[in-house]
Length: 583
Image (cartoon, rainbow, N blue to C red; front, side):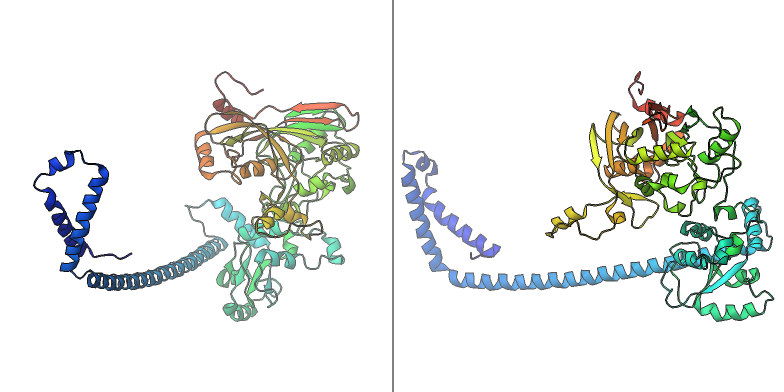
């Protein structure tokens, strides 16, 4: 379609209107109000327009005007296109330059932050080793650190080329456990040091590195000291940089300074911090209050308090349910201590361990890799540290075997109460597999279905021959959720589980979009902060309310119910309508 410029269009329009309006100017009203048929009006207007257009054509060269207008429009379009391209190119260059400058700035800030952190930690170590006390710091941690530094003998490991590029915690596990392969040394010290324990060493500031460019000077300086087997502490202070990140990547020819295995496994050390790095060989009986729901000579059922770990593990070698039960059963129980908590007890047969069934194997946490049956005697199932409620513990090998089998066969009915953010809905089953998170190894997650994801991309479904590990596929997990009441923000939720995966309820509700209130791992940070500020609660509001099971010896059906903890009860009462109580 041909287009005229605005100026030409306006000129032609004025000319056309003036010529068309002339015949009607003498009496316009009389024309339009006469009884003239519409078709006649249209014919007359068309004739007049054609006549006037012929007059306009005779006065103006319309073809030339249209041709000039076309060339002008094309020229304007080319100019605009070139301008847009030029502006787009300039904008792209500016964006790339800004992005590059931002990345370089971030790298520089990260390097500066790392240098500042290393310098600060090195300075703190220097002050502590020299006996320096700063009144603005807590003296007790400094004293512990100085004491540990004096007790530990440090070894050196030069990073070979084939090890470079690996994480420090992975390499440290291999180095510390080197020689634990059945030889005489292993017989005298059979315990292996786990990766999580190496992480504790790193985060506590007991592992150091010498950069490759300083390795020769470090080696020559070591020769000036009398000590040849252990790295001198003065040399560590002067030339070594602390490593506090487990993800630190090692460079070739760098030197790692770490506590020797003999120091970590020394039984003469009275340090409390060193005991966190290695597992004890026996359970320490501790007088800790327990809420006993039921007990006989075969089993004991308790209402576990929130904040209490079930059995000793890395970082929690005491203060657990097992430590408390050890004291209670040997000193206070009217039904006797059972088989596992006696002075002459030889431990638990691993064939009767609750970790022998598949469900418990999945529930085992990475941080308990070197846990041995004697550290979890009678433990049939576990509750998370922040979870309260019904917990069953066996007192005999027969009861342990039968209870563990009942859990493995899913013959135990478990019911929980949770406070969730949002409204999970009523009478819904969540059937989604759960596996360990690929990046955050202490977390679990709902594992995506590989068949559906591949099918959505147009690929064939996975067959039964697919060589995908169970860990990547996840384990089957089923949870039934039912909202008892929703106040517009929070919900009181009843949850029944058919399986017992690690963090199952917490992960399922998070994936459902309604995480548990107060959950610092799977919950919402802002909500958790508000809960802490308002009520001082820093744990997930999850409670194992009810457990139905057959007695491991008599076969009698038993139902145990645990009352809510006061902190959780207050929150639930605030959610429920006035006068309504949780049944």
